[in-house]
Figure 1 (cartoon, rainbow, N blue to C red):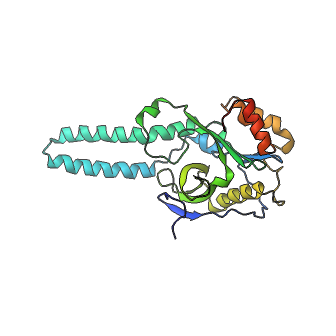
Figure 2 (figure 1 turned 45 degrees about the horizontal axis):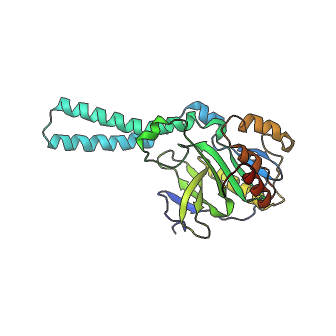
Figure 3 (figure 1 turned 135 degrees about the horizontal axis):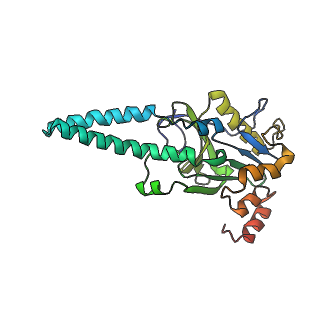
Length: 271
C-alpha cells in the first residue's frame, strides 16, 4: 500500500501515525526538554566526527556510468587512450558532484542540527545545513556556499511522519517529516527527523515527539542530555553562535500563539 502523501519518495516504507505512546526507554538524541519545548539532535557526534561518507551507492552508480560511457565511446571509434581520459574525467566530475554535498553535510552540521518542538504553540523550528536533506540534484552554484543554511518555522499539524530507505546515502532507513499544505496530503517540503537508525530507535523518537506534543504523562522531560533546569547551559552550548535568529530562540519558550505573535511583532517578523 503506497504512502498517502504526494509526491511519494522512492524507497518509501511506511507512514507513521500521530498518537500518544507510552514511553519507557531513554531516547539518546533528546538533548533538552522543559514544559514548553523539546530539542533533538539529528546527527550524533560519533557519526559526524568519523567523516564516514556513504560510498557504496555512489560506487555502484559510478560503475554503471563507467560501463555505459565505454560502450558508447567504442561505438564512435575513439582510441583507447581518448576513451580512458574521457571516462576518468566524467567519473571525477560525477564523484565530486555527489561527494561535495555529502562532505558539506558532515562538516557544517554543527551541534547535530537540533530540531525544536514547541507543544504550546504547535511550532517546529529548524536551523540546519542546506545539504542536510534528501536532495540528490543540486544546482552547482550552491557548491560555492558551503555554509548555506535553512532556517524555518513549521506548523506541527502540517508535518507527518514517513519511514523511507535513504537509498543514496545509506542502506539504513530514515525518518522524515513531510510538510504538507494545510489540511491536505500534498507535500511541499520535508525535514529529516532521524537520518539513520535501527527500527527500534527510529520508532522511539517518533513516539516520543508525538507523546510530548500532546502532553502525554508517560514521557520524562528530564531525561535529556541537559536536565530541565539547565536550559541556560543548553542554549549556551547548543544554540548560541549557531545562527539561530533571536526571535526564534525567544519563541522556543512561547506559551501560546498570542505570545508568539507578540514576539514576532517585537522583531518585525511577518506572519
